[in-house]
Length: 123
Image (cartoon, rainbow, N blue to C red; front, side, top):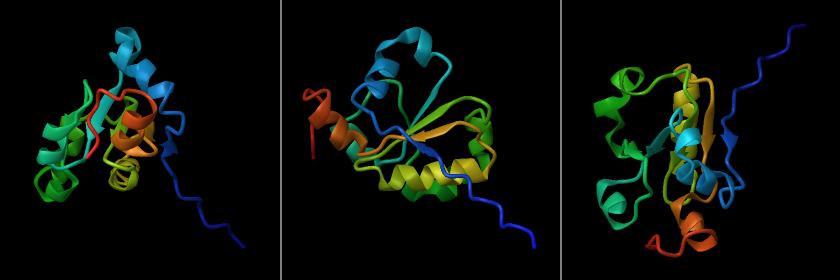
């Protein structure tokens, strides 16, 4: 009787208050990391973090076929949204496409604003 393979679940970046802030501040650590924001353009315009590149989840049909051209599957990738739900969906999508090191920002930009940087607007 063979066991079913366990699904690969992206690791949550639960300690966003320390880890994400350190990654955004430390140029040498951030250099090798890809930062992906899956919110809508209007959300991004309202509140954005440095280094994050916009890939709206609602527009996945436009970029899903070329995601491995746009991002390096071997590089660590941090995914962000408003509260962490869409970024988890994107994280799973990336892992299914062969990305090896994907972290979802638990709580999203909203939690980051409340817990770390109140200068980032909430909405």
